[in-house]
Image (cartoon, rainbow, N blue to C red; front, top):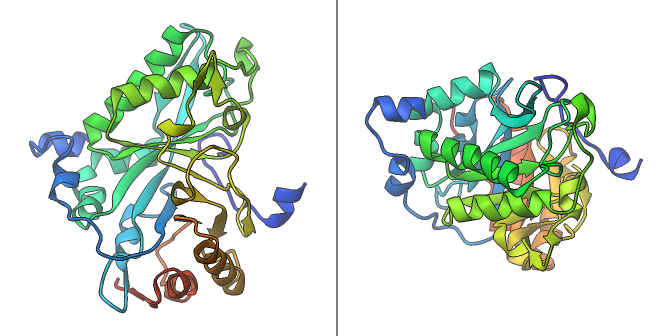
Length: 305
């Protein structure tokens, strides 16, 4: 995110170089509990949505022509931030106006997806202030931030947290450089706080290469990990089974349909269980979406406005 607005149109060249829920009296798990498990067979499809520009509801507008099942299984709210309070010298979870609006209107922006069986996850991203997942100075500080994350998941009835360690600009505001214990302590605390929720890793930044410390390896604490470079194939360097990895990453409308199809075909042929997409907008993208659904699920996608 550049300041509070983020554009993340990565290319192969880059690779190379719940208030509303509480108001209605719903519990944090109401939306998810009402959902039935998706019936389709095949890899888990993930859609990141830039909520500065687009609606989360777009994720629920795509179904498979063959049987009406959801195309997407996981919708990612992109993105909250990890900010830094210079007075208290501590990191805190920050929502810009657009993210806050989605959360405050969970009844109309999040629950409809969950009721379809789509999991809704909050991505958290650095914000140029020196605070990041990899430089907590103590276990206490890491655990405090983990508490903020799990509290947000509970308050707004979300299904988990996604870590994206970019744009932290470690060292700004007198913050420390990445250390080996920070991310391990953060993820360990978060998993203890929410044992049944999703924790995913956007496989980039200092945190992604610091997954073990003091005899503790946090790899198994993640539900998913994915390649961060759109239009490319790159197996995430984390010890997870293939069923939880997405070596394929595509930008909808930004990656050619032939590449989208090729990466989906490779996902199936090599036995991987996740397919990552980014930047789903409000246009009819059924042709772009069908390019991967035909390969993953043997069916075209249908867009319903």
